[in-house]
Image (cartoon, rainbow, N blue to C red; front, side, top):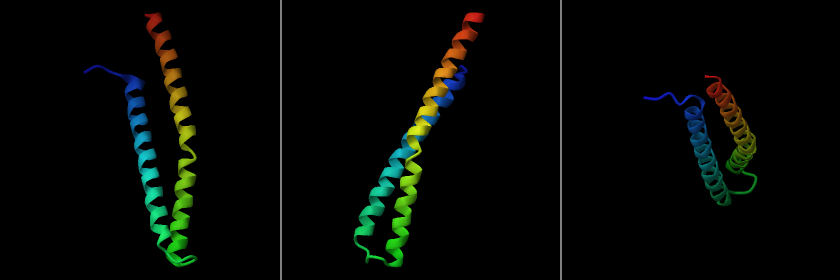
Length: 87
């Protein structure tokens, strides 16, 4: 088996990020649909509202994580190119 180094890890990170986005979106849609059936200002409505707020906060960091993964890949490619040319 060949050693993929940072690029193999990057693939796993990208796949994990995609799953997080999909699950976060599906969870937000499910909570929003569930909240529509609840009595306003009830205990359950307040809990789902807090859940939606938490999902919104968590998903607001996804662009930053994607940017960091991209920068990490770029730095890895540059370092790999210098290492390859050095040999």
